[in-house]
View 1: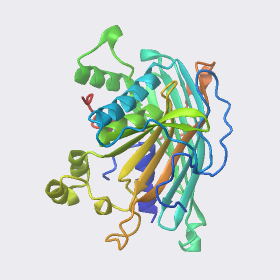
View 2: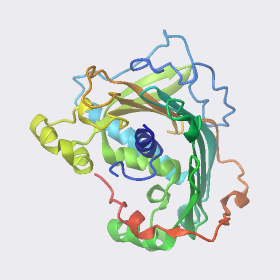
View 3: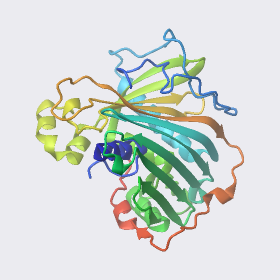
View 4: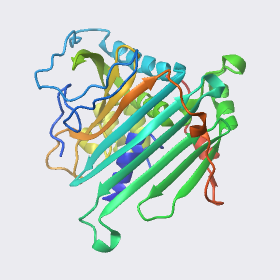
Amino acid sequence: MLRQLALLLTVLLGLATAAPCFATEPSASSSVYGRSANPAATTPVPPVPAAAPQTSETTAAPTAEDPDAGGRADRIVTACLASLVRESSISARMRQRVRVGDHSVVGSGRYLQAGLGEEQRFRFESNLAADTRSQPPALGSFFTVETVEVCDGVNFWTYRRWGEHPPEVHRVDVARVRQRVEKITHVDGPDAPAITQHIGGVQRIIAWLREWFFFDRAESAEIDGVPVWLVDGHWHPQQAARIFPEIAERIDAEGAVPPEGLPDGVPWSVRLSIGKGALFPFRIEYFAVPGERPVADPRVVTVGVFELYDVQLGGPVDQTEFIYSPATDTVIDTTDGHLGNIFGPRP
């Protein structure tokens, strides 16, 4: 079970490639916590959509006959990532909920970002607690995951502690990442793009989702009076076949990824709730077929939700938040492995 939790958390947080009591799919108005987020977002960012009545109205949804529905959905996700890259500063709180089998993982954290281009820095903090009471008492009642990511412009630091295991600190050389990005984009110097999406944080999560999933449906909705895009995506068959070779033949034969064929703990589809004003990703929902394989019931249900709230864009950010000094002499350099996971821009 802990392996399944780790696999799902890997996908949800976008930390690496996926290979190594939710009901069925909720309405647009539902919240993972079933209560108001009550954010204090500053202009021009509207509040994160909160809990609303089931009668919440969804308007101007494209029909199945809309020939540009898929293109529109992909453009919205691309523009969302571009807006994160161009934002001068971001401050947001985070909350997460994940379910695997009878176990739930609930967490909170925060995300900070400041600067543009080569001067862009970020800090991503996440603290998760997984109920593991079915394990022997000697292993403890709860399994925790603590993650801190900091990019100071020179190094990308990752502190991670899984349960009672000793923490690990990883370091990635930002200069080498920049060189790799410049090589695959054929753009360098002052025109070179910001590389945060190739390093970590919220940008990396959105970039991974756009790489793994194709977004083929976008609905224009209002949640609590906030105009948002609800954008649905599913696995790229080629990507899923590469990451999960055990089902590659079935994917090739069916031309699609079977939801019950993916390992337990791997999402089959995602839904992004993106504000129309600043194109900010307030919520990411993950759907899958849970249970040990083979499953008797292949229904797709919600298995995870990641929310950003109390969002402030363009405000002041304490620059000391981007200073990190490892409290250990044991630092693992993971630059080579990180470079292998940097992909070129997808059309």
